[in-house]
Image 1 (cartoon, rainbow over the protein chains, first blue to last red):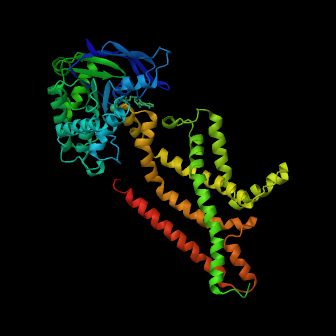
Image 2: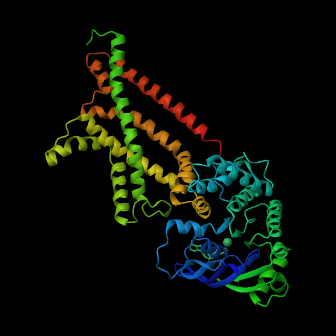
Image 3: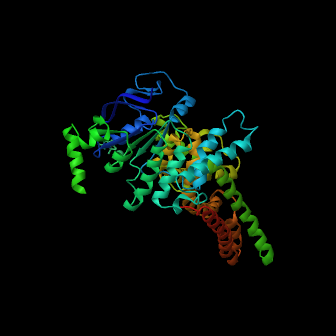
Length: 262
Length: 225
Ligand SMILES: Nc1ncnc2c1ncn2[C@@H]1O[C@H](COP(=O)(O)OP(=O)(O)O)[C@@H](O)[C@H]1O
Ligand SMILES: [Mg+2]
């Protein structure tokens, strides 16, 4: 069964329709890369799926269960909204770490707040907190930051900050992890370390959707590539199909432009 | 009065300064939270903190209130609070101190609310969004992520405003509170000028301590930028 299914998502900002009916589904363990020129609606799509924007039409299912239906008038409880939210993790282009917390606390903050709602929190507080800390350190070690636990975000390079934000998202064990151009805010020499981390996650069968302009990378890590154009999915297939043999003219034009740049 | 010793004069001025200190501290205690209420009013359609309902009139009432309070002299506001209730509604304000506190609290709450608003609006939207996608509730995001950053941002302008408040307390003399400058003026009338000039020292020392305190707080929060 598909882990994520989105159906006919529409979104407009004022007069401009940014998403004009986006539909796709993906399986557990799959890695999907989304390509597309600037302004084609990639960020908006990710934001709609992650509830940062409310889609005007469409449905979202997680493991077959509807988590969003634009038509539905039913009021969803705050608790349910959070539960839906936690199906997904999102890594932002601009990291958005919490500047006042050190690396470890950035990663532990959300799990700690969540643990407070557990019924056994009072009784097992110290074990629960120790567990959270262990998980956080494990995650930070996975992204190569075990030496930086006590540092503040402002003391880290952009690449290190982005790795913290990946660990912060991973520690909540989302069913799908989204990346919105995770390397676009980085100096070129720092993109490699992020791509390596993502590649590592892919090898460990983490379900991911990655919006990126790194075509070579997408081809390497993704099981599937979606090409977005002007608010719709113009092409959806294996890297070989989409990148090596694009059917769509716009995809071809987009890829040619990238090839010229190199 | 002319027969008072220097020490007695200093003590007398100190009693006057006690009134300034009292106005200062009570104004702060009340204006700091009231300012936040006004902020939530003028930001009632700001999505991340919808404490008050999204209701345009609340926003405009708050904004008009801030405009009037910031746009007129505090001295005039003191007169209005002191005399208007008695003249318009026949319910004179019994205690001068109450009138002074009402005027000061309203005035400073309006200024503080604008500082808070600036601080809250300066926090990047991404901070709220990061909190949300990590499954935090709105109030968790506000109290665990946003608030501290706002406090750090507003400490310098708040220090400024608070130091201004110390000096403004001497305005209370116009409605007859025997604060330090009014106390000193009694000596001036009997030909002794130095007590009046010496009042500056009280203000300087008090503000000096506040400056050190705020410097310390700012330093404490400067571990990140
Ligand atoms: N909050 C918004 N308000 C108005 N227009 C927006 C907003 N967010 C995005 N847009 C517009 O939607 C279009 C698609 O944007 P975006 O999803 O960021 O594209 P991409 O990520 O593919 O570059 C752009 O034309 C952009 O200007
Ligand atoms: Mg984008």
